[in-house]
Image (tube, rainbow, N blue to C red; front, side, top):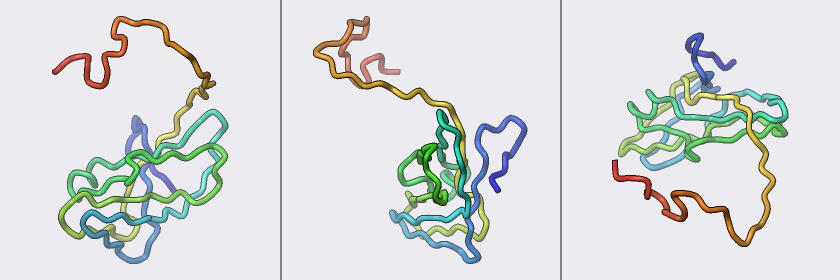
Length: 132
């Protein structure tokens, strides 16, 4: 089961469901099974984030940066871990591999438009709000 590390933790730790070490080569990705499935309420999303310790100590983080679990998904929650390091890394049996955050979201109604309203920033572009 996912476990919250403290009373104020936003994310619940997800564990590798494996009885053997999972080896991930440098710059490779492995799909790690958790053995979990969840029924996320409509209007909410499950987000899979990296564990900071795993990312900084082993260079392992979700391959897609943030995994998205939609409320209509009913399959197993799996974590695609990518090894960003130069070395072979391993996930030990039942090791914490990611964290799950459940959040509400707003469903956007997308409309095509010929022009957009003006703002102070305008079309300043990526990184245009300052250099610090």
